[in-house]
Picture: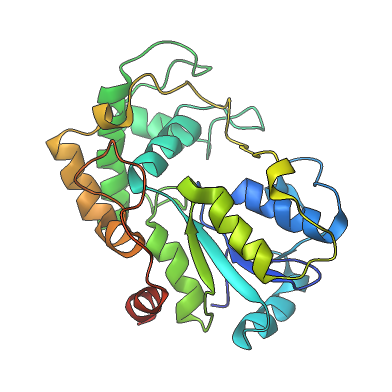
Length: 272
């Protein structure tokens, strides 16, 4: 299976397992900058050169050799499941993507028809009942993950632990896993641990939120979207994420982690 979703700098200073909706655009641009002294002009996910990616056939042997021998510092970044799934809804379901189309073509019409959600009209700008539509979207997410219908789960709402685990199962070892919510501290520790061709001053790095502006703004606080049933569905889907990465399941209003991530525990529980 190899190492899907893995990026590596051309200098092999660091290896990163991408987790969608967890600051991956900013991290990718930092990696690119650390080799070239400039940012990639465009969405880093579109970069075909300047950064090794498992999706690039010519990069696979290099990434495989590096990860299997743990030659470079390897890391990933995680996010509170409540805010991550909300971000996925507003970006991927309600938003118009950078190609001017709806995400995955027929996906949104399918959910509108089968689950009765609204998305803010043709351009995602009209007012609609965000809370009701989001809760119906959660039912769809649960069905894709639990029953794999009406389609396979999408990478943007499949569990973080699932993304993180493939790296371990196939022979990789993480040196650090940090939280999106404490990005500067976590990414700063990564940069301190590696030697890069170009100096990166983290305080000067902008945030590359490629999904910003795609869809409507969230009109309510996070906790308003999650009633008892919604929280039950969230637990069914993301229970392992909350436990392993130390997020507060009982309080959707608290996006911050409640304890330190135990790397040994992560490797043990996700490596089997």
